[in-house]
Length: 266
Image (cartoon, rainbow, N blue to C red):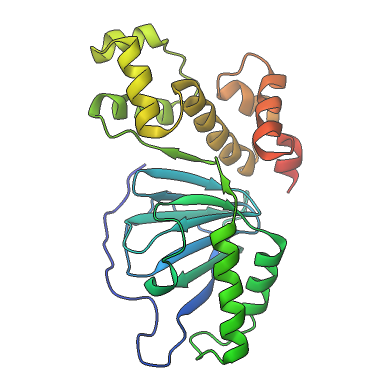
Protein backbone atom coordinates (compact mmCIF):
# COMPACT_ATOMS: atom_id res chain seq x y z
CA UNK A 1 0.00 0.00 0.00
CA UNK A 2 1.52 3.29 -1.08
CA UNK A 3 1.03 6.47 0.94
CA UNK A 4 1.61 9.99 -0.31
CA UNK A 5 3.76 12.04 2.06
CA UNK A 6 1.74 15.26 2.16
CA UNK A 7 2.62 17.46 5.14
CA UNK A 8 -0.06 19.98 6.06
CA UNK A 9 1.40 22.24 8.78
CA UNK A 10 -1.33 24.87 8.68
CA UNK A 11 -3.98 24.98 11.39
CA UNK A 12 -7.30 23.15 10.92
CA UNK A 13 -8.95 25.53 13.41
CA UNK A 14 -9.86 29.19 13.33
CA UNK A 15 -6.92 30.83 15.10
CA UNK A 16 -8.57 34.24 15.51
CA UNK A 17 -9.08 35.50 19.10
CA UNK A 18 -12.29 34.18 20.63
CA UNK A 19 -12.68 31.31 18.14
CA UNK A 20 -13.53 27.85 19.43
CA UNK A 21 -10.49 25.81 20.54
CA UNK A 22 -11.98 22.64 19.04
CA UNK A 23 -13.66 21.46 15.86
CA UNK A 24 -15.85 18.37 15.50
CA UNK A 25 -16.39 16.94 12.01
CA UNK A 26 -17.86 13.70 10.60
CA UNK A 27 -15.42 11.01 9.45
CA UNK A 28 -16.66 9.78 6.11
CA UNK A 29 -15.94 6.37 4.61
CA UNK A 30 -13.58 6.16 1.66
CA UNK A 31 -12.99 3.66 -1.12
CA UNK A 32 -9.38 4.89 -1.48
CA UNK A 33 -6.57 2.51 -0.51
CA UNK A 34 -3.85 5.08 0.20
CA UNK A 35 -3.43 7.29 3.25
CA UNK A 36 -2.26 10.86 2.62
CA UNK A 37 0.31 11.51 5.35
CA UNK A 38 0.14 14.95 6.93
CA UNK A 39 0.56 16.81 10.20
CA UNK A 40 -1.02 19.82 11.88
CA UNK A 41 -0.54 21.77 15.12
CA UNK A 42 -3.74 20.43 16.72
CA UNK A 43 -4.30 17.11 18.40
CA UNK A 44 -6.78 14.86 16.60
CA UNK A 45 -9.16 12.26 17.98
CA UNK A 46 -10.90 9.69 15.77
CA UNK A 47 -14.01 8.01 17.18
CA UNK A 48 -15.27 4.95 15.27
CA UNK A 49 -19.06 4.53 15.27
CA UNK A 50 -19.42 1.85 12.59
CA UNK A 51 -17.16 0.05 10.15
CA UNK A 52 -13.43 0.58 10.71
CA UNK A 53 -10.99 3.47 10.89
CA UNK A 54 -7.35 2.59 10.11
CA UNK A 55 -4.71 5.04 11.35
CA UNK A 56 -0.99 5.18 10.71
CA UNK A 57 0.59 7.72 13.06
CA UNK A 58 4.33 7.88 13.51
CA UNK A 59 5.48 4.31 14.11
CA UNK A 60 2.03 3.18 15.27
CA UNK A 61 -0.63 1.41 13.21
CA UNK A 62 -4.11 1.26 14.77
CA UNK A 63 -7.37 -0.30 13.62
CA UNK A 64 -10.45 1.14 15.33
CA UNK A 65 -13.66 -0.91 15.54
CA UNK A 66 -16.85 0.82 16.79
CA UNK A 67 -16.48 2.28 20.26
CA UNK A 68 -12.72 2.78 20.05
CA UNK A 69 -10.89 6.10 19.69
CA UNK A 70 -7.55 6.82 18.07
CA UNK A 71 -5.57 9.73 19.55
CA UNK A 72 -2.91 11.55 17.49
CA UNK A 73 -0.92 14.23 19.40
CA UNK A 74 -0.16 17.62 17.83
CA UNK A 75 2.53 17.62 15.16
CA UNK A 76 2.62 13.84 14.60
CA UNK A 77 2.68 12.81 10.92
CA UNK A 78 -0.30 10.54 10.29
CA UNK A 79 -2.87 9.33 7.78
CA UNK A 80 -6.19 7.51 8.05
CA UNK A 81 -8.74 5.62 5.99
CA UNK A 82 -12.30 4.72 7.00
CA UNK A 83 -14.51 1.96 5.68
CA UNK A 84 -18.10 0.78 6.16
CA UNK A 85 -18.16 -2.82 4.98
CA UNK A 86 -18.88 -3.13 1.28
CA UNK A 87 -20.49 0.31 1.12
CA UNK A 88 -17.89 2.96 0.16
CA UNK A 89 -19.94 5.92 1.38
CA UNK A 90 -21.41 7.05 4.67
CA UNK A 91 -20.29 8.38 8.03
CA UNK A 92 -18.00 5.99 9.91
CA UNK A 93 -17.28 8.14 12.94
CA UNK A 94 -16.22 11.53 14.24
CA UNK A 95 -13.06 13.64 13.98
CA UNK A 96 -12.24 16.00 16.85
CA UNK A 97 -9.48 18.59 16.52
CA UNK A 98 -8.15 20.16 19.73
CA UNK A 99 -5.81 23.15 20.01
CA UNK A 100 -2.40 22.21 21.37
CA UNK A 101 -3.02 24.00 24.66
CA UNK A 102 -5.82 21.55 25.47
CA UNK A 103 -3.64 18.50 24.81
CA UNK A 104 -1.14 18.84 27.64
CA UNK A 105 -2.82 16.26 29.88
CA UNK A 106 -3.47 13.86 27.01
CA UNK A 107 -1.10 11.07 25.87
CA UNK A 108 2.13 12.25 24.27
CA UNK A 109 2.13 9.39 21.73
CA UNK A 110 -0.53 7.85 19.45
CA UNK A 111 -2.79 5.48 21.38
CA UNK A 112 -6.10 3.62 21.09
CA UNK A 113 -8.62 4.41 23.82
CA UNK A 114 -11.98 3.10 24.97
CA UNK A 115 -14.81 5.63 24.52
CA UNK A 116 -16.74 5.83 27.78
CA UNK A 117 -20.52 6.37 27.68
CA UNK A 118 -20.02 9.85 29.16
CA UNK A 119 -17.45 10.79 26.52
CA UNK A 120 -19.71 9.60 23.71
CA UNK A 121 -22.61 11.57 25.19
CA UNK A 122 -20.48 14.72 25.38
CA UNK A 123 -19.41 14.33 21.75
CA UNK A 124 -23.04 13.79 20.74
CA UNK A 125 -23.96 17.09 22.41
CA UNK A 126 -21.01 18.85 20.75
CA UNK A 127 -22.29 17.73 17.35
CA UNK A 128 -25.17 20.13 17.91
CA UNK A 129 -22.82 23.12 18.13
CA UNK A 130 -22.28 25.24 14.99
CA UNK A 131 -18.70 24.52 13.77
CA UNK A 132 -16.19 27.16 14.82
CA UNK A 133 -18.60 29.05 17.07
CA UNK A 134 -17.03 30.63 20.15
CA UNK A 135 -17.79 28.69 23.33
CA UNK A 136 -19.95 30.19 26.07
CA UNK A 137 -19.36 29.30 29.74
CA UNK A 138 -21.58 26.22 29.60
CA UNK A 139 -19.91 24.88 26.45
CA UNK A 140 -16.47 25.56 27.94
CA UNK A 141 -17.38 23.47 31.00
CA UNK A 142 -18.53 20.63 28.76
CA UNK A 143 -15.24 20.81 26.85
CA UNK A 144 -13.45 20.53 30.20
CA UNK A 145 -15.40 17.36 30.95
CA UNK A 146 -14.37 15.93 27.59
CA UNK A 147 -10.68 16.65 28.24
CA UNK A 148 -10.93 15.05 31.70
CA UNK A 149 -12.60 11.94 30.23
CA UNK A 150 -9.95 11.66 27.52
CA UNK A 151 -7.20 11.95 30.11
CA UNK A 152 -8.78 9.13 32.12
CA UNK A 153 -9.66 6.90 29.15
CA UNK A 154 -8.40 3.31 29.30
CA UNK A 155 -5.65 2.49 26.74
CA UNK A 156 -6.45 -0.36 24.39
CA UNK A 157 -3.93 -2.83 22.90
CA UNK A 158 -5.38 -2.55 19.37
CA UNK A 159 -2.24 -0.97 17.94
CA UNK A 160 1.07 -2.08 16.51
CA UNK A 161 4.32 -0.21 17.13
CA UNK A 162 6.87 -0.65 14.35
CA UNK A 163 10.40 -1.40 15.58
CA UNK A 164 13.10 1.15 14.79
CA UNK A 165 15.93 -1.32 14.18
CA UNK A 166 16.18 -1.76 10.37
CA UNK A 167 16.39 -5.57 10.50
CA UNK A 168 13.53 -5.86 12.98
CA UNK A 169 11.51 -3.40 10.87
CA UNK A 170 12.06 -5.77 7.92
CA UNK A 171 10.67 -8.63 10.02
CA UNK A 172 7.64 -6.60 11.12
CA UNK A 173 6.94 -5.43 7.56
CA UNK A 174 6.95 -9.05 6.37
CA UNK A 175 4.36 -9.98 8.99
CA UNK A 176 2.16 -7.02 8.06
CA UNK A 177 2.37 -7.92 4.39
CA UNK A 178 1.36 -11.52 5.14
CA UNK A 179 0.09 -12.15 8.70
CA UNK A 180 -0.22 -15.86 7.83
CA UNK A 181 3.53 -16.26 7.40
CA UNK A 182 4.93 -18.60 10.05
CA UNK A 183 8.68 -18.20 9.71
CA UNK A 184 10.20 -19.51 12.93
CA UNK A 185 12.38 -17.46 15.24
CA UNK A 186 15.37 -19.60 14.29
CA UNK A 187 14.74 -18.94 10.60
CA UNK A 188 14.44 -15.20 11.22
CA UNK A 189 17.66 -15.28 13.24
CA UNK A 190 19.44 -16.78 10.23
CA UNK A 191 17.91 -14.34 7.73
CA UNK A 192 18.62 -11.26 9.87
CA UNK A 193 22.05 -12.36 11.11
CA UNK A 194 20.90 -11.88 14.70
CA UNK A 195 20.69 -14.27 17.61
CA UNK A 196 17.33 -15.49 18.89
CA UNK A 197 18.01 -13.69 22.15
CA UNK A 198 18.81 -10.38 20.43
CA UNK A 199 15.65 -10.53 18.30
CA UNK A 200 13.48 -11.35 21.30
CA UNK A 201 15.02 -8.72 23.59
CA UNK A 202 15.17 -5.85 21.09
CA UNK A 203 11.76 -6.55 19.57
CA UNK A 204 10.02 -6.33 22.95
CA UNK A 205 12.04 -3.26 23.93
CA UNK A 206 11.07 -1.40 20.75
CA UNK A 207 7.43 -2.51 20.36
CA UNK A 208 6.27 -3.34 23.88
CA UNK A 209 5.26 -6.82 22.68
CA UNK A 210 6.84 -10.19 22.15
CA UNK A 211 7.15 -11.31 18.53
CA UNK A 212 4.26 -13.77 19.09
CA UNK A 213 2.01 -11.07 20.59
CA UNK A 214 2.88 -8.70 17.74
CA UNK A 215 2.01 -11.33 15.13
CA UNK A 216 -1.29 -12.06 16.88
CA UNK A 217 -2.20 -8.36 16.86
CA UNK A 218 -1.25 -8.09 13.17
CA UNK A 219 -3.55 -11.02 12.44
CA UNK A 220 -6.34 -9.48 14.50
CA UNK A 221 -6.04 -6.15 12.68
CA UNK A 222 -6.10 -7.82 9.28
CA UNK A 223 -8.96 -10.05 10.42
CA UNK A 224 -11.06 -7.02 11.34
CA UNK A 225 -10.40 -5.51 7.93
CA UNK A 226 -11.30 -8.71 6.07
CA UNK A 227 -14.47 -9.27 8.11
CA UNK A 228 -15.49 -5.65 7.60
CA UNK A 229 -15.06 -6.22 3.87
CA UNK A 230 -17.51 -9.12 3.90
CA UNK A 231 -15.17 -12.07 4.36
CA UNK A 232 -16.59 -15.27 5.88
CA UNK A 233 -15.22 -16.18 9.31
CA UNK A 234 -13.77 -19.51 8.19
CA UNK A 235 -12.18 -17.99 5.10
CA UNK A 236 -10.65 -15.15 7.11
CA UNK A 237 -9.25 -17.55 9.72
CA UNK A 238 -7.60 -19.71 7.04
CA UNK A 239 -6.27 -16.62 5.23
CA UNK A 240 -4.62 -15.50 8.46
CA UNK A 241 -2.88 -18.84 8.89
CA UNK A 242 -4.94 -20.33 11.72
CA UNK A 243 -5.08 -24.12 11.86
CA UNK A 244 -8.57 -23.96 13.32
CA UNK A 245 -11.39 -21.45 13.27
CA UNK A 246 -11.82 -21.87 17.02
CA UNK A 247 -8.33 -20.42 17.66
CA UNK A 248 -9.23 -17.31 15.66
CA UNK A 249 -12.56 -16.96 17.48
CA UNK A 250 -10.82 -17.32 20.86
CA UNK A 251 -8.32 -14.54 20.07
CA UNK A 252 -11.06 -12.31 18.70
CA UNK A 253 -13.24 -12.79 21.77
CA UNK A 254 -10.32 -12.21 24.15
CA UNK A 255 -9.20 -8.99 22.48
CA UNK A 256 -12.55 -7.48 21.41
CA UNK A 257 -15.08 -9.09 23.72
CA UNK A 258 -17.15 -10.42 20.84
CA UNK A 259 -17.01 -13.13 18.17
CA UNK A 260 -15.93 -12.57 14.56
CA UNK A 261 -19.47 -13.37 13.38
CA UNK A 262 -21.05 -10.74 15.64
CA UNK A 263 -18.38 -8.23 14.66
CA UNK A 264 -19.09 -8.83 10.97
CA UNK A 265 -22.83 -8.51 11.57
CA UNK A 266 -22.31 -4.96 12.86
